[in-house]
Length: 228
Image (cartoon, rainbow, N blue to C red):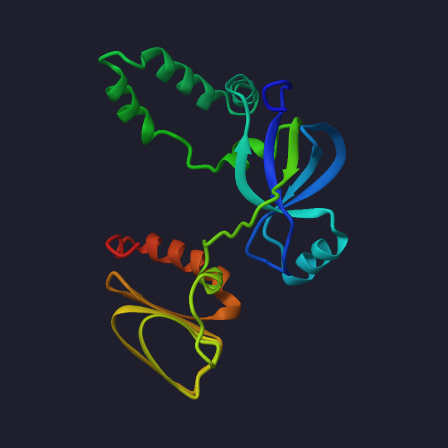
């Protein structure tokens, strides 16, 4: 599909539960089949929803997790960038022209800090009108949050997921990452406790998605560069 048509393909994942940790893709009408695989128009991209919206998306059967995986031809993405991000497209063209020459490294170094800090979703996928989605027929997990680790680590008889040294008394359903020290829990439930690189995180499991907000806040102080 990506080679035969001027489209930008994204892979959508069938939701397995009510998750507020992922962006979603609303699937539109079918646009074709290749090798037995159905391709659908991506009607829209939706930012991370609240729990009520996520439940509605799951029940509709027409929304898929945005995996952040894409397939496209060089020609298609170049054209899309030229239309929606012309400054970036111009820079890429200049880099391509300079590739293999003595001035390439200097051009990259000079241009990098000037680049807009933006994801491909915001820069392109939410603006282009030729986005096609295909369902990912494979197991997928985005370990971008601490709760996602539960599927990959052992749980004790009280539902605590532990990586490292932890002793728990009357505590359940916690996630503890503590490889370089002992962490002791007494009478707590549904917490995330992480010791790493000179920093300690303690938060409610229900608010795990807000860790990014805390990182932004810490970064803004300019004091914690060594641990971020």
